[in-house]
Length: 406
Image 1 (cartoon, helix red, strand yellow):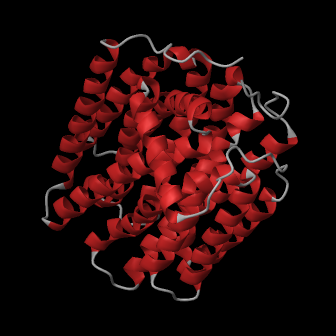
Image 2 (tube, one colour):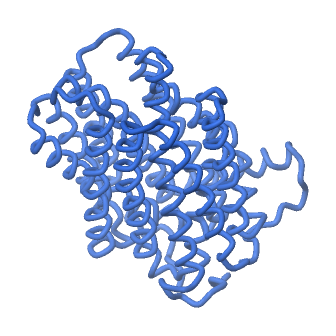
């Protein structure tokens, strides 16, 4: 059986470079969202068009899903991350220069689609199986710290100057690309024997069938898809909810509440790394049910301190929920179809759910539904979906379907 190609240490030069690149790239991703939303308002786009930004971003993931995994696995993943961050840089620069914001954000989505399989897939190449949950904890902590900084910076800078916010975002993407140059050139996981559209599609369909058949990977993909679909919708729900529930109309407050979610995720990820193993990943599911319950509570919240506490709870439950499921998919995917392929298939599932939920939210928002009622219905549906997943998994065989590698 294939061994990991590097010494199993969490703090190798490669891991530090990956974490630094991820921090800068994720910081820019999150600051860009608030900058782009402010740009839409300054250009007098209708309020209901805000979720369409994410639809363009997510659409790139879905269209490129068959190609992102093979691309990530057929080249050294550090170089894939460099190419992806360069595309993000181009999209942010285009927004600075007056390109249509939806098209520019879609170009950033193209870069993100290529980036995701590489950034997660490289973890299973830099660490051993018994350290993979911890490595994911570091990755998620880096990501969430970036979300925290990016949300605060994006909201604050957008209130100050929209163009200035976009320039800062562009500089962060440039820094991420430079950090990618420090990642060692690891051997490609799976070189494609033939480079053709038909071969790539067959390869992707084969990987998808394999991952859907394996109970562990199917379980993980459903769980993470629900989480990220809900999280993407929550961002726009917060933007609409804050003025109504808290009476605050600045760009800062939704950004600060997103930062509170980020702080909670860091805590939840740390707890998951300590208490959840690959063989007991189902322990994460109760936290997923609690995410929906906390979202329901938004409809009864009208004070700023309570809102921050509630968002911290949402984040903590989210971190505890998603980190073990990501680790499970990476390890089982690395063993079966390659980590890059596995993350690309996961991205297709997650972004399809995002597209559906954002589309439903856009329709509900355009129809004028009360934001409190929308939050309550959304949270209840999320708790129900994860509760069903939990019940189904408890009735299945043990997670030890595939023995972890030594």
